[in-house]
Length: 293
Image (cartoon, rainbow, N blue to C red; front, side):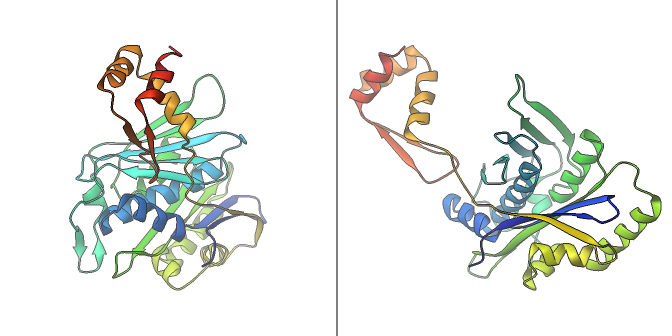
C-alpha cells in the first residue's frame, strides 16, 4: 500500500501556495483503534486529515497543533493533534453512532458533527502560551469550517477540501484532501482563475477514488497555473504515549487520590485515549509514585 504523504507546492507567479495529502492508512488506523462506525470514521478522518496538513504548515520544528470540533451533534467532541511534520493522532467522543446518511451511499457528516458549536485550533509554538483561535462552525462538514477558520482567525483566504470514502466492509477505501491559500496581494484575475479551477476539478473524494495522488490532485485543481512542487513528506497515525508519560499523569492527580488508589491494593489499568495501548500499574508501582510527591 502506498504510504500516506503530503505534497507542498507554489504557483510560479508566487500568489498561490498549495498542499495535498493522501491519508487513507492513517484514517484506517484510527478506525481500527477506535472501532468507529462509518459516519464517525468519515468525521474523525476529515479532522485527522485537516490537522495533518495544518500541523505540517507549522514553522516551528517541535511545535504541535490541536484541532478540536464541538458541534453539538451525536458524535460529541472530535479532536486531533499533529506534530510539525503532520503525524497525527485523535479520537471521537462517540465512535459508535448509528449510520447517518443524506441519501443512500452519502454519509451525513454535518448532521453527525452538528453546527451549533465551535472549531478550535491550538498552536503550541514552544512559547510561554499556546496560540488559541476559535470560530463558530459553518456546516459541521469540517472542510467549510477549516476554510472559515483561516479566513477569520488568520486572515488567510483558503480553499479546503477533505474526503473520506468508507468501503462496504466499513474499512477506509480512500482518504485525503487539499489546502490552497492565497498570498497577500493576489490579483482578482488569479483568484477568479483559481476558483474556476476548483469548480472544474470538482469534489476531492471522486478524485481520490479515481486513484489520483496528492500531486495529481493539485495539478488538476491548479490546471491553469504553472506549479512548482517543493517537498513530499511521509505522514502516519502516531501516538506519543509511553509508560513514563502515563506515570507522570498519575502523579498529577494529586497525593490524596493517589493514596486512595494505593489503599485499594489493586492494580489499575490506564488506556490511552488516542491509541490501543493499555498500561497496568501494580499497587507497589503506585506506592513508588506516591513517594515522589
